Image (tube, rainbow, N blue to C red):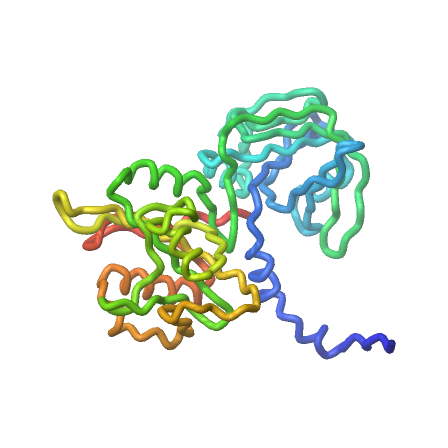
Amino acid sequence: MTEPKFDQTAQQTFDLAEFRRALGAFVTGVTVVTTIQPDGSPRGFTANSFTSVSLDPPLILVCIAKTASSYEVFSQTRHFAVSVLAEDQKSVSGVFASKAADKFAQVAWQTRATGAPVVTDAAATFDCTTHEVVDAGDHIILIGRVVDFLHTSSSPLGYCRGAYVNFSLSQDALAAAGSRTQVGAILEHRDGLVLLDTPKGLQLPTGIKLEPASDAASLRGLLAKLGLEAHLDFIFAVFESGSGPASSVQIYYRGRVIDSGTAWMDSTIRIVPLAQIPWNELRDDAVRSMLERYVRERSEDAFGIYVGDTEAGKVQTLALAH
């Protein structure tokens, strides 16, 4: 078998901005990486390029850009710590992503085995000695051997497509809504958006609750009945509809259909390209408005979370991590 030759032209036209956006589809946690400098002062920065490497021996890694102001310090340090931030610590992420001179004066921290600072009340912390520093293009890979660690019950702060992700929001919303809930999904298939033909016009897949799949009235149950296997990523909108006893809380996830390669048998399913959504066939004004925002934010690759009612609300566009 002849091995294909690498196309040098393709390398020259490699779109770094698009590559970065593609990498942004991977959901990560948000960490603060810290050490003590030779003069005894603490140093730290925000990073989401963190992962486990080995259980035996216990190794983790973080990646540091060679252009980063902390590069020289961390490339030579003999010990460092990684704090996995809890979801209520967005402000801590912002502090360590900034150029503030007094970062450690703005957050609560402590030290453990090596003396490197760890963030108080983080979801988890890992105290390390430096195991190896690996050169990797425009970054270095700092591999640490964990000598001490701590974890809590706090939900971690997530990051995806340029925004923070609140993993507990959907559960809080479902719990608060109680029995007056409608749970729907904005699902994308490779060919477009999943809509359903109904006597009342086109609608999104919706149930009176999220689970279980064995209950045909739930969203999962409806998707199972339709033969759709879907992955629900994040919550997209929470709003109140109607008034008085007839009011309900609408919760919509954004997600994607997992293509099994088999044809769906249900004739109500309609896959519509995002650029060709028949807006006049969507009879629910709130859903139409929500989908218009979805298409706009999808094109910008930057999602927010709408919280409010059918008349007014706020799209929470969260701060970027660095």
